[in-house]
Structure formats: C-alpha cells, structure tokens
Amino acid sequence: MRDATLTVHHPFVDESEFASLCPPTQRASTIVFDTAESYSKRGARDLDSYSYGMHGTPTQRVLEAQLTALEGGVKTVILPSGQAAIAAIFLSALKPGDHVLVTETAYPPVSGLCENFLSVLGIEWSTFPPGAGARIGDYIRPQTKLIWTESPGSTTMEIEDIPAIAAIARERGILTGIDNTWATPLLFKPLAHGIDFSMQALTKYPSGHSDILMGSVTVNDLTLRKKLRDVMRMMGYHTAPDAVSLVLRGLETMAVRLAHSGKVASEIAREIDASYPVEVLSPVLPSSPGHPLWQRDFKGASGLFSVVLPEEWQARLDRALDALEVFAIGASWGGTRSLIAPMSVAAHRTTAHPRNDRTILRLSIGLEDPQDLRSDLNRFFGILTQA
Image 1 (cartoon, rainbow, N blue to C red):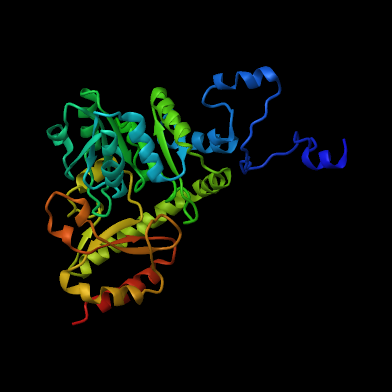
Image 2: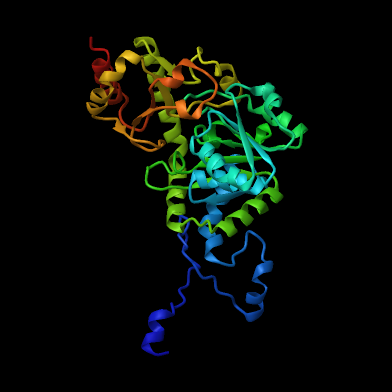
C-alpha cells in the first residue's frame, strides 16, 4: 500500500492480553460489513446489532444494559435529553384521536410538548391534580391511551400513589409512564410498581457533573421498545459515544453521591422548616401530604427540595440570592455543585393552591461541606428576614 492509503487504513493491533475496567469509547457513523451479502441484509439485523452509527455502538449498549439492570427492566433506549425521551414515549404511544393524561405537576416542557406539538397532530391532552391516586379514573377519557406521571412532582414535590394509578390504567388497557429523575432507580423502581415506561434524565444524578444532556427510557415489553426505536430512527435521535462514556463514569459514583446529597438535603430541609416561617416542600417531612406514600414506596430521598417564601420577603430576594457564595444560581440539578433557583409554577397549574402565585426556591444539594452550605443559607435567610 502507498502512503496515502496507509494514512487511512488502521493496522491490526493484538488486544488478546489487554483488559481494562473502563468500557471503551467506540465512535462511529459508518458501520462496515465483512461481505456484500451481510451489507445487503443489514436491515434484518435485530435491535441489539449494528447497522449505522446513529443506532448506537457497543459503548451505548453497555450503558443500556447497565440501566436496564438498575431499573429491573428488559430493555433500555438512550436519547439526547430527558425531554427527548419524553417526546419519544408520547410519539410511540399516541396517534391522532388519542388522549394523554398528564400530571399537573409534570416538568413544564411536557405541557409545552402537548400544547404546541401533539395537539397540532390531533392528539388531545389534559391534566390531573396532584394526589389523584386511586381517583385517577375520574380523569380518564374513552380515548386515553397514556397516563404520564412524575413523583415527586416538579418543584412542588407531591408524591403520587403510583401503584394505584398503574393498576387502574392496566385494568383499562392504558399505558403509563413516569419521570423518575428525582429518585433514580436507586430509590424507586417504577417498573416493579406496574409502570410501562420508566424515564429519567441522565443529565442529573447518573451523569453527576453538570456537563452533558441525556435521557433514558426502560421498559419490560419488547414491543414498546421497538416502537421507541422506530420513533428514534425516524426523528434522527442520536447520542454521542463520548457523552455516553461520561454517564458510564458517573454511574460508578452515583450511589455514594446520591446517598450523601439525600442525607444532607433531608437534614437541611428539616432545619429550615424548624427555623423560618416558610413552607418546606419535601416528602421526608411528616407534614408533607405524600410522606406516607414516600415511606411506603421509596428507599430514601435525593438532594432536591423546595421552599415557599412569604410574600413580604420578595423585595429582598434578589439581594439575598446575589449574596450566596457556595450555592450557585442555576437550573438543572444532580451535579456536584449545590444550586438554588427561584421558580414560578402559576402558568403550569390549574388546581388552586396559595403557593401557586408565590416564589418557590428549588434547592439542589451537591457535594460541598454541609457546614459551608449551612453558613451560606444562614446568610441568605438573614438577608430575607431583615426588617
């Protein structure tokens, strides 16, 4: 071979004595085939095989298998973000004329997806209030084909009776899905409670370092997985192997990170609740309406909770936020840095509640020293409570 050819063709390297604890990062757009016949029959390969880089490399298969084991499912698909994962579920389960029933406390872009995209396609949607549980049947329509839940609820942290919802849906032949990002499968396993689609934003705790976007969906039914993959193929969804490798690395420390953040967050939530005239929204508190359900179904708490501020503190909020030294002001959560974000839920709720028109602070506890976090919060609340 001449030099130009040698610069393109990689030589064989014997790997028979090589072993590493790290899954290799295998990048590919083109998948090559040994024979003309195998290329002509590539469309007949199963979903775990390889035909084009968009559908995954062995690096992605490792992450899929690891998440499947954690979820207690049959198969997992990987998507570019949590919202992309939700969209793929909805598009795989619904067609024009169908209806999707969405928890009112879902991640806000879910209602945007329904209103601005699905409704245009002739797919109807409506919401059910937090805590519906066994009353979910009151909100089901004859055309309902999917019930979408989130527990705890986004920002306001309500716990749903997931087993009750799943049981009623199954009786009526309705699929169910859940955003399980808060708990991860380490704290709650939706498939074991009857849910059909268990989704999580790998952006959060599985990645753990605030540097990627990714989502996953795990199912117990291969037919559901096939429909998800069909949507992903038609929409051109692809997740880069380098990002997949970062999640594989993050997963190795997720259990210890989640345990630490959950412990510290629970302690700080209790301390704030006992020290200030605020409403702390966290299922770990006995005063939370969902506390008994959380004790029954969950193995513990993650590092995310919320605080509803009195109206008279609003004028001092910006100054208090600007004085923070350890907490960063930002959306998302689940990384090593502690975050705080002022939230408003009024535009996304239909069930009346006094807190809907108030500023709600969402706190994500990271891996800093707990005493530094407490000092930062003491300074923060000190400014808010000044006469």
